[in-house]
Length: 210
Image (tube, rainbow, N blue to C red; front, side, top):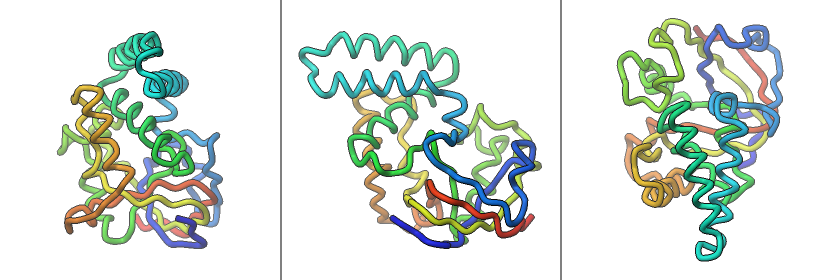
């Protein structure tokens, strides 16, 4: 959805670009902006996505694309973790669903006021080894997280981390499960509490809360 000057919240590691996270500063989040996953996985992830899309377009005649995709997927898993596979399939699913939605590789994550407590707890990987961020954030991340109130103008997509599929599922099953993330059909209260927002556009830092 399009938003104008909407107030949201963002958890940020104070050791990453602290010069940007100052009240009144503006950050442009576009396709040139790399999220945590974008910084780690590109350009390998984009190559894998293109190959899998080619395969899905014509599975009978594009089996070589599937073979090449599986080779890259194995390389990514060995170099990183199974999370590489999950993020690849989530990006494939996004492009098929609606390529105008903010990409997880080129967005900034936000939460609403109701989600502040959940995300503070979820980002502490030392307490939650199953966290989607485990392996990418230090175990003492909770001690260096800062939370900012921000104002955003641009494209905001609301979903929930409860819709993130299990990274260890077989590829075809993972692909089917990944659709739930982009459909973002909220039916339970806990999904509301676990809401996450993907944003692209202009972000203005209003104030640091802690």
